[in-house]
Length: 195
Ligand code: GRF
Image 1 (cartoon, helix red, strand yellow):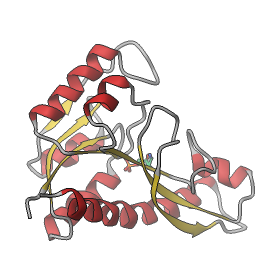
Image 2 (cartoon, helix red, strand yellow):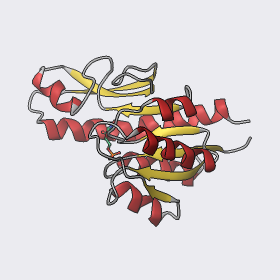
Image 3 (cartoon, helix red, strand yellow):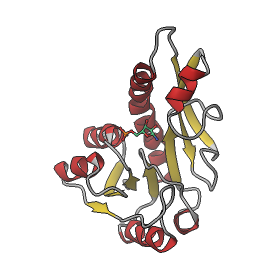
Image 4 (cartoon, rainbow, N blue to C red):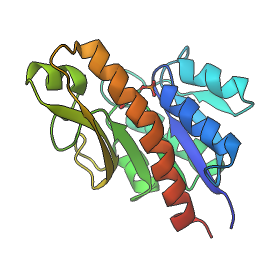
């Protein structure tokens, strides 16, 4: 079966990308990471990609804070298309995805969110969980639609919220769960989507 061609988008340190790339390198995911793109020129995820010999590109987001300017998102979509990407993986990509990208990859964009969706969508979900005194939290992999963390849920992993948890300690526990769940889900999708 052909390896599924992935494009990864991220804005930050890239620990989920690292987990995915390591799983691909071990042969646990039948995929080929064709390109990594960030909206931050100095994002750790770009450095991690370059260290692995994976093409890494910065796309300037333009003047908005929460989304890309449409023509810049169009350019990003074209980079993914030119790289023959079949599944777009958001790994800490901190902008809303809009029509240019959604229409280029219908039902082929996935995201990981640090809560048990539909609970605690949006920013710093782990802080929301601690503030709400939730007894459990976790992470969710879902398809991306035009809403904020509203797309169809693919899989979730639970972690406990402990009585003495700080936002930071809970976030670390959730991230450990993310690093297992995201590669496992991508591996399943690679089997399903590959020809
Ligand atoms: C993760 O916690 C993920 O759930 C959220 O952004 C964070 C990215 O972290 N969407 P990293 O860059 O993968 O380390």
